[in-house]
Image (cartoon, rainbow, N blue to C red):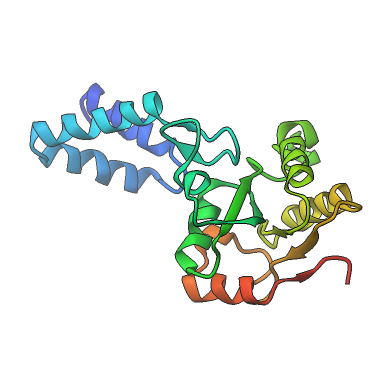
Length: 201
């Protein structure tokens, strides 16, 4: 049975579909919209629509971008001899906030997860291999989250990149096992980057 008028109930249900938003939070957000100026609500709606219309994936690293290349790939001051491999754009932002890293990125789009039907072909692994081959010598930092699936993905990538003329490192220190990189604070991420080590040791 509906507790609110159908349009309001629909907005509550749509908010509930978002990650981390439960029924109470969804209701609070929807009721807040009712208190906002109609122009502000319209502006919010247009911003969400523009997000889906205008944002695309960078053709090189798969970060979110307005054009073919994201701001990081376009930046001539970045260190092109280092590629940090992360799961999602939010992980890229976590590393950027640390201020410790000036190299490039490669976003996988997730982690290997046989239980959830995510395999090699579902991630941007082939594109990573091609980038590393084209890069020549340098460093590949495997910065997947320290979860079982994140560690398995990092190990799989290490085996795929083995034999190429690059140093392969894995962030380790400072990130507790089972945590997500996106939720780590700046100091923790900075320490993890400084404490990275070659894989296989």
